[in-house]
Length: 113
Image (cartoon, rainbow, N blue to C red; front, side, top):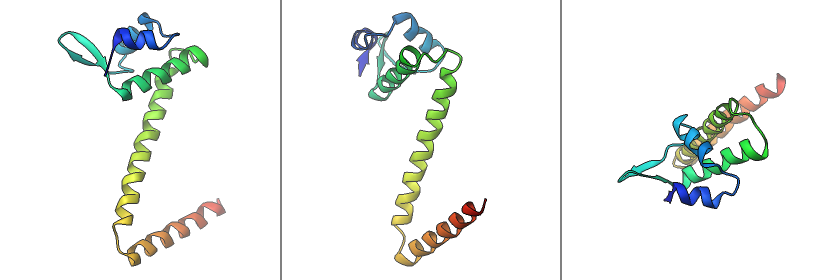
């Protein structure tokens, strides 16, 4: 967990006013304890991503939430795919083979398009 002043100190380009704006826009979600705000490792990584988008890539403030939404969707899809992979791996070999065959059939349909 990292406090607000620690994250601002750690990321050279980060402006406290920008961080406050991102919190108020719900782009990041700090945890509060005894009136102090703290960021998890995941939130710190998100702040670093926003800083890269905003300061380095110069993506405008209106576009950053769209990019973050797409990143969130990609992350959710990845998590679902990992769960699906684990569920398939837990099946017996015949079921796994049937699933792989169905995937291969679907891939053939994709190639025709």
